[in-house]
Length: 340
Ligand SMILES: *Cc1c(COP(=O)(O)O)cnc(C)c1O
Image (cartoon, rainbow, N blue to C red; front, side):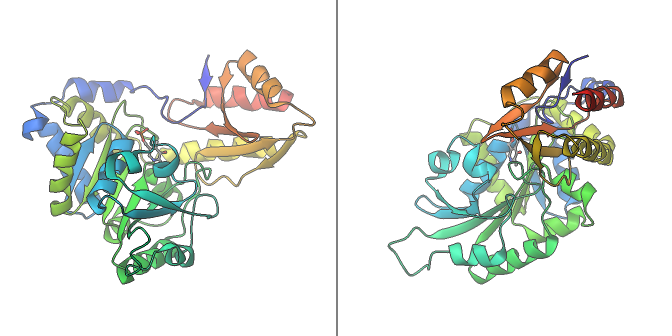
């Protein structure tokens, strides 16, 4: 039994998902004539109460397309210093859009509306880059799966409105935030100009993200996706996995959250663990007390027990629970930790 807790992307399609994929009706999506892609895009747009959506091969391409939609070369976007769009998309904001990032020193990947307002360059001060976009991330990845307070998101929206900035949500793990919180997809749809959601993280699809927005923006996004090389042909096989996942794998995220909390409890009781960050969803970030236990020693012990987790640098380690992390694996992992 191999237990992979490195990411929620390590899942393989379930039997039901594979069956849905094999039975998909497909066409050529570059000609917009793949019926399964078309129904996924309609379904996701309707879920969020937005006009349109577009399927992408990755979350990175969906976010990069959104940045391109909302900016011109030379502009600046505002994001938290932990943001995926800044840290983990290969410098795409500058490469694809010629845009710089103003980093905000937030808390667990989340900024306040006041911080956002202070970060805006005055538009008449032509020496500075023109601020045109605010990107936020929910849940936060590097921030340890933290969920935003919806009031703060609304306050940031008001700042965007006042200063005529676009507002993009990197919702790679928005499903986790929705399951952990009280808000609806429609409430998110009403707040943002564009939202990217991922199908291959918590939902267990092999491939895919969806960018959601109004019709005008999504029409433009189609051209940008083409330029980035993201136009695919019989991608309905992938969309079928997405439809299946939306229908069957959202509510069950609560199980991943529960398991993450149980792991966190055990970690907190261990003498050589200095700190476990608050666990809100399926990500656990913790720090070892290296005077008592070296990171390499701890990881080796886990490897011997067929358990993989990942280091994040600066003495931090990360565990992510997911669809393929079974109850049996969970019992084994907790026992390995308790017996350490
Ligand atoms: C994983 C992730 C992405 C990018 O998704 P890929 O499909 O890996 O390109 C974007 N944003 C966040 C917050 C993520 O965790």
